[in-house]
Length: 259
Image (tube, rainbow, N blue to C red; front, side, top):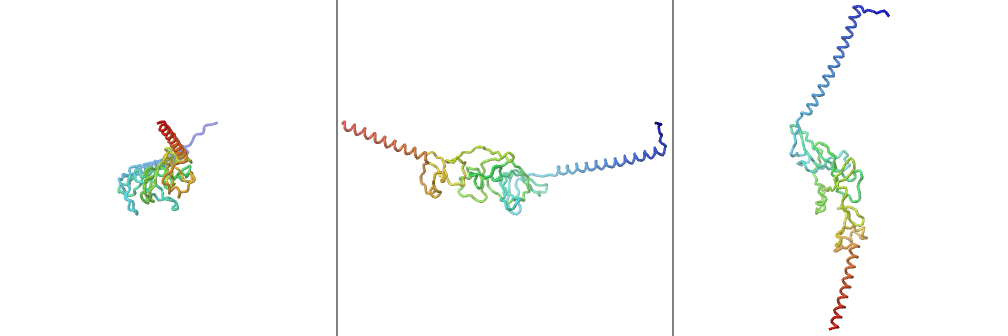
């Protein structure tokens, strides 16, 4: 093929087109560059926004002062559900002391766990979960107390804002810590503080009245109680005691007769 040479006019037009394309590309690059700088500046501004940690905060509307370590009731997303319960880990606000936010660790109710509520779970029982969150401090509805299991069972009266916790709960696996607890009664169930139980004076184990063929009313009237096993042992001891006593009396009488 013969080589075709471009005329000066063709060369000029080609250069003009190339320059226009370069300018458009340069303009696009500039826009992208400016946009990137804008995003970086926004991110930097957010990062450099000063937030300070507060020792305490008074919640508007309820006039309650909260601190880190307090247990609080928080407004649920569904008003028909009971208040959420959480432990406050940290309180922070912006530089002006406004927009207070709380870092919390959620308590789960038994029915919110993977296994659901079971027979031995108390009505006021909660699980301390590994679920952390950050919420507006103004969603707090009130303060509450989450007792240890031992201290809860010693309360003279349980109020509406009293709860207890004996398990930590892994919200992703459904595992509990501790994974084993003491069991009682013939049914071998963990203790539910809502249920009436009677204690055997022999073995000191606890029993549900229904598990030992007894009504709650009969259980409340008891002054002393021995379980079936201990009753059998006591009966054996009593019989042995009577037998030993009779045997001793015989020996004494024989000796007396010999004298």
